Each structure stands twice: as structure tokens, then as C-alpha cells.
Length: 388
Image (cartoon, rainbow, N blue to C red; front, side, top):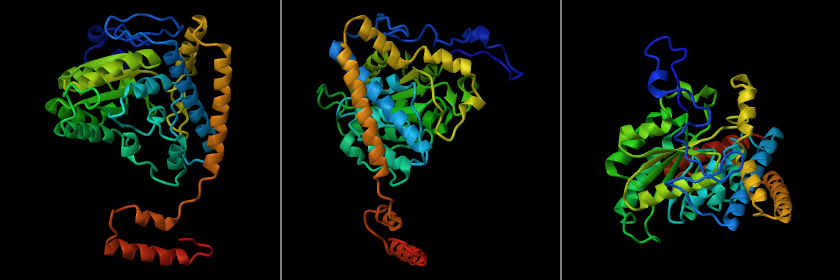
């Protein structure tokens, strides 16, 4: 999104420098499937997709949206403490998630439910985190998918350090496609203003680290619009750090996949970091504690609904005879079954035992920790029906 000087009251009129604001992402937007469901070509990132691959992308997005819808409903019914919605960002997450190879490693924020799905993570594990029964009940090494990071932008530093470790392990630039590895680091447009993210850029550039920085620019850092955070398109910031930046249509799953695939391969080959700005829109709230009607116009939301990532691929599939009606009806039934599984599985989760936290802090219990545990156990015992 290009921005102009608006209400700062000082400085030059940047519209003469950077041009007008582009609601559609501007001419630099990489796109393979238009909002109307029309397939277009791109000179650098065009790929051929089979009908099976296209149906697979569609199925992934439909099921991930169902996970999001069910989790939101569970929170509204008091079954989850909070939920970070991804409504409208399914293409950005599925496209990026499907471009990752098994040996690659992913560092998410707290909204990458679609990427977690692509890595084979049971969505009930995500619900356990937001229900408060655990702090992330999966081993990152089992999925090459790190735990969710709540501290805004911190995961980009972790990702860069992990990528530097890959270099030292000799799994970058060897020419072996089953060995060469890269890191995919997710963050949002709001996190791009954090010092951690910019420090990660510096280290990644300095060490030529095999990391792809994937920014889902959903236009809002909670209630702050993107034009208050940056006077230039976010992807252009990469040039200041010395590595390429790209802007892709984040509502186009095909383009997102193609761009992320190319950037990850570039990293695996030892050519260093890339910044991808997935230009999308958060159609839901920042989290279920947020009320977006207080800071954004309903007209903006309605305009972005016309760019729905699932609807555009559905139009393409139907228009070109790439999916039978049975495919859509079977998928609807599968989504219903998934919703039922999530509802029942969430409600069946046992309440955490208060003392368990002392067993999951250190690999070996220290005398100090034992004393704290005994003290807390004695405190709990003063309450009727307390359980350890």
C-alpha cells in the first residue's frame, strides 16, 4: 500500500515521492488468480498447477476457515479464554505452509493456524493453548513448527538464529534437495515496527542466513492502520537491509505458494534472506477481545469480502470444470465433521493440575523449585476440594 502524508502536520507531501495510495496493493502486486477467479500469468513466478493441487489448496482453506469459525464460537461460549482469528488470511497461510519442505523449520506468531495445519499439527493442540490447559502441547521438533510466540516479533530473532545454526550444521547450499533447509518466519505488519524484527533483518543480512521473512500485512496492527506505521510499502524496507523484498497478493493462494516456494529455495541454495509481504486483510477481529467496528469502516470490510481467497478459487474450479459438485458436498460434510470433533474435543479437555507447572519448567528439579512447589501445595491444601 502506498501512503501519502495525511495528518502529521509536518514534512513534505510524500504523495509526490511514492505516488497515490493503492487499495489493491499497487502495480507491484504479484498475482496468479484475480479476485474474479481469472487465471493470469506472471513472468517470474508462474507455475502450472494440476487439478488435484488446486482442489487440495481449496480443501485446505475451507477446513482451516472451519477451524477458525469453530474456535471463535467456542470462545464466545466460554470454552476458550481468547482466540486469534485468521478469517480472510487463509490463502496467505496455506500458500506459505504448503511451500515448506519437511526439513524446513517454521516460526509462527499466534495466528498461524493454517500453517500449523499444513505442518500436520492437530488443531486441538492449538485449542488447548487458548483454553489455558497448557502452554503449547507439542514438541516443535516433531513438526518442525515452533511453539506460538505471543511477544510481538520475538520469533523473527529466534528464526534468524535457527537459520544461522542450519548454516553451521552444513544443511544449506549443499545441492542435495533432501538435505538443504531453510526457515520461514511469520509476523504481521504491526510487528514490522518492532525492534526485534529489524534486528533480525540486520543479522540475517549480515550472515546471509537462510530465512524467509513472511509478513502478513492484514492492514491493521490491532487498531492502527498500516499507513501510520510506514511511509513506504513494507516490502521495500528489505532493500535497506540488503536483501530482496516482494509483495504478493495474500488472498491468492497460488501466487503466495509460488513466491514462498521460490524464496525458500533461494534460501536453501545459500542465497540468503528474502522479505515477502503478503498483502491481505483481516476480515475478523484482532482477537476475540477486540471490536474492530470501533476503528474501521464497514465499507472497507465489504470491499475486501469481494477478494475472499476461498471464493475466488471456488469460482476458478467451477468455471473450468476442475471439481465436480460431489467434491464440494463431500468437503462440506468433512468440514462439519471437523467442527464436531473440535467442539467435543475441546470440551473434553481435562482441567490442568496446578502443581504440574513445577514439573515442566526445568529438565531437572532444583531444591529451590521443590521448596516453591511444597509451599504452593500447602497453600492449595487450605481450600476444600483442592487437587494436586
